[in-house]
Length: 133
View 1 (spheres, rainbow, N blue to C red):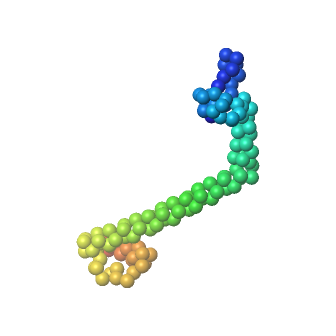
View 2 (tube, rainbow, N blue to C red):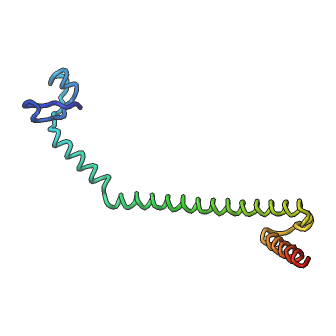
View 3 (cartoon, one colour):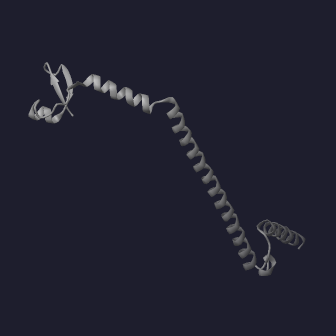
């Protein structure tokens, strides 16, 4: 389809490009007023794409995906925080071992929580012994 005009551009039409180039014997297609065809196409798109039920489904899907992505991010952040805490604990253990405050065997078989509690007790014991001296 191509655009043709009539009456000095006052009227605009869609017509078959073959018919426009070679004449009415080349194609039996219709010439349609641009305004009429545009209104039909826009109306059809409006009816199909902007249907409230369809839009509700599309938006619900988008919101569900967004919620899932947000939940995955929260889980990922929680996992990273857990790993950071474990790494921090390991560094504290190495520091304690390096400074002679703890033995390597002191932490054997302890969970993360137990090791943190153990570190806190050791730190308090060290602080108390320094105050007493």
